[in-house]
Structures are given as structure tokens and as C-alpha cells.
Image (tube, rainbow, N blue to C red; front, side, top):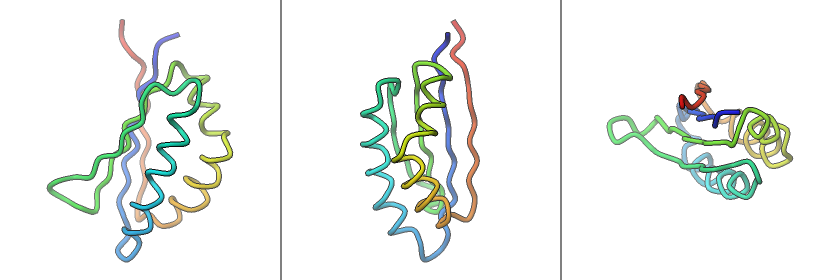
Length: 97
């Protein structure tokens, strides 16, 4: 199966940016420890500080599904980060070989 690239785009809600930016490295560290994770990077826009992009790579779709079921994703991402966002979109791309 091809590798999966995930692009998660977050719009920070005013007043919540410090808390979200403190939680994201915790999520990244836990995600990088997953066996199917190949990369997990956090980037903040230089033009719009309210925009954050997570670039995630997984060995395949199954590895990404396992990530979404993990305790750290459920607790940190869905339980604590997402409620503090103004908007969130997630895009999935399979590697073309």
C-alpha cells in the first residue's frame, strides 16, 4: 500500500493560541512514536499567525486509522485541541509511485 500524506489545517481561535501551541508538540511527540508514523511536523504561517499546518506521513491508511484511534489523538487532538480551534480541515493524499 502507498504511503499516506496528511495535511491538517488549523485556524486558531483568538485567545486560545497559546494553549493550542503548547499542546501541539505533545501531540506530535506521541504521534512520532507510533510504529506507522513516518513524519509529523508543525508549521505556523508567516503571513497569517492564526494558521497552523500539520504535515503528517504514515506508512499506509491502516497506520493513519490506528493514529486516529490512539489514546493520545483522542485525548489531545479531539478532546483538547480541536475545541479550541476556529476551523479545522484534514486532507489525505496517497503517494504516487
